Image 1 (cartoon, rainbow, N blue to C red):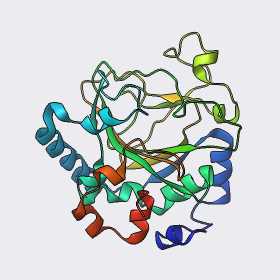
Image 2 (image 1 turned 90 degrees about the vertical axis):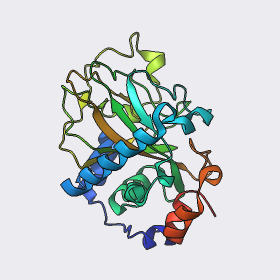
Image 3 (image 1 turned 90 degrees about the horizontal axis):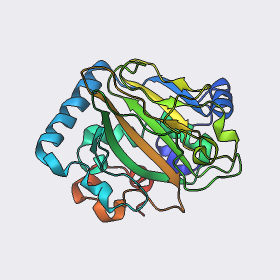
Image 4 (image 1 turned 45 degrees about the horizontal axis):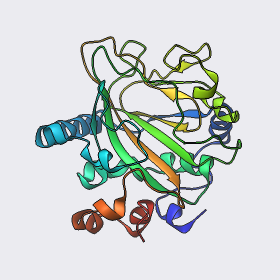
Length: 259
């Protein structure tokens, strides 16, 4: 195991053999409730304050990214670059179980690509089935991997994420196969779990948000990782703040792709 991962308490046995096998076969894994109820409340409070401060500029950092096709999504509220917006968000890219999952999918040479918030609005939030990479890849040679942190209970009713199990094992892209990428897929699984839960999913698996049929936002944070030699969605060398560097360990700084 790479030294910086060991310093972040990632070990070969941080995930069990069964968990690794499940992730290999299905392309996603429920890591359980990694956030306590108190932490979820604190994080949602921090999110509300950021939304009040940033207003119409919320998520503006994504507008600078040429790797995100639709940075301003009509059906969802966004926040970006949470790395630089408070210590409360550090856990999202340093938690050992998340990093162990990322390591298992794309190897030990990786970095955070982006740390963003997405909330599907009532009556909205449906996304096309998609992958988070611009080309097909040979199964096993994966470039990107995501984690989704549930800040509300996820259900079929409130627009939970869907994923097509095993689709990461095919080199087919959904836009090349499906006539309607928004339509339900016969093999899709809806992520249903309580707030505080975290799911790893191989970003080469077909996935997307569903429609929120409730009267409340469905909130989540995505910590998204890429191979070390790939460009980040949000360039941390550009946005990093001195106060962020001051509070982080050298291993956490390396996780941001900053030497």
